[in-house]
Image 1 (cartoon, rainbow, N blue to C red):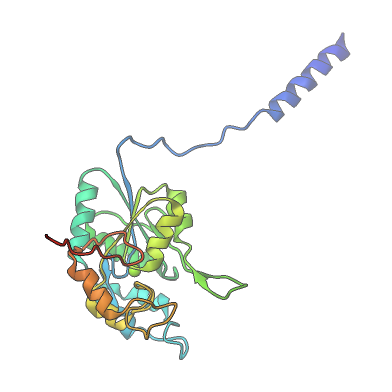
Image 2 (image 1 turned 180 degrees about the horizontal axis):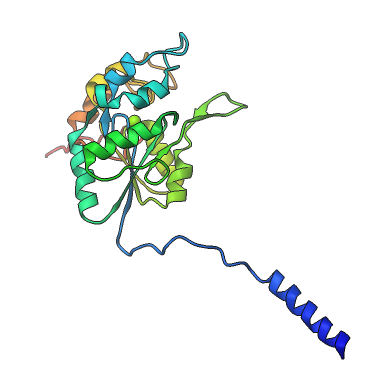
Length: 240
Ligand SMILES: [Mg+2]
């Protein structure tokens, strides 16, 4: 009898050990509450001057000291007011706002402090502020966005951004991407990754010209743009 009790005890312990473990889960979503993501550069911050003044780590114009950039938004970056108004509107309505940037994250807390000050609510690294640098594909050598991983993980519903990669990341994550039209001075300074590069000579990687881009803008796109990719124009209506 003793050995039978021992067997029952062992089987019980075994079954408990095999039972699925309770995994702590996030709180259930609030029905109707949006989780909205925003890119930073040229979406909530006009940061061209910050990048122009930043020290470079090499002769490569893209090899910027991002640790310095992240510390100097308060001196050289300006909030893009229509985007700040939209963020304020969402925040006041009880929706959640997140920021995802492709800047490397060195000194990233400083970006959070600056955005908190300007937007009037806490923007905290690892909570609603994330750094998601591009990754180079070892085979092709192309650098691809990684923002879609965070967009999915955070369960965002909409993602606002200015660049081609923002639209691509939203698309891969399966959420609505909305293009914020980039300031003309940033198009001048950083035309890469914007409708392919409207300032470049025509090439397979840059099929859209400055003229096409201006047509796009003149067709009534507002500050929040549209998810048009590639550029598309409706033919003007012909009256009989
Ligand atoms: Mg941007």
